[in-house]
Length: 361
Image 1: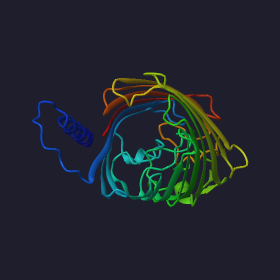
Image 2: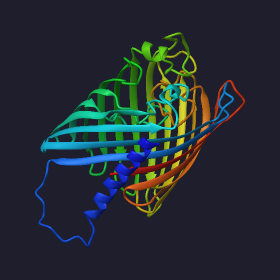
Image 3: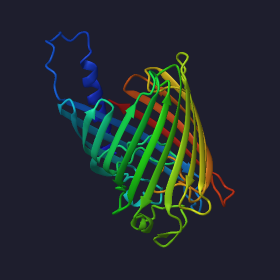
Image 4: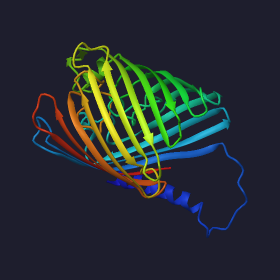
């Protein structure tokens, strides 16, 4: 609990410092010179309850906190260096992480990001190091909290005034805990129609090829994928197609997303589908958000070591997730989410409740 208190206090101090800069009671100062240094970070405090877990008589009841604190350095306009530290603390030990299907250690002090990004043009960038995965993927395919290590490039161009075509490609080390030596080759092409307009749509086609998966399978991270010992019975060459539609007539934006997944490396149990609907936006001050996701993942459709660990099952399951969120201001927000899931060969549902408090700056 001391670790949780430290993370929370760090975020509060950072938030208060940012608010003081805009305080009208503070005497005006001369405009400071532009600095190449800037700061970024986020905080999550979570209360987690899971019941109806297969082959277990106990429920999971835990408190978790994570803070990520980073710095950016731009010595010239085309070059950017970034680094971030992650602090995490939980009411449960790290020895329970694999049993609880977690993608990260619950108690940790670790390097979250370390990268260099070069912008040879306005719409082109090259990235090297440990950073956020550059492809836009749904939780059925990828957990956005993961930080692989690799090289990537992305570019885009505008065929019309409001439309944009984009391409992202890269090669990465998966960088999961417990000595993971997995490799990921990834590419994504996108077409964004009327980007930024009140009515817009996107189509995203992605390929992810996973290799060198023996160690993570031996460590139990392949989870519900079909395997014998450390040998997976399928390869994992994922083809993912997303359709996104957005309307924003006023204060209540609406987004619908359909994600269709097929593992080209599997002969059976290789398909997944996810549909989500989101009304509102909790990233806005005093903004409400209501969402519903419905997903079905066959046993070998997704690489279960890398998709979202908010869902208790990573494949071989079906379920729904309703949520409601509220943004207090530009920094703080809260989300209450429920998960109602069932593994395919069972008749009992597993239920999860997540209450999250977020801060971003």
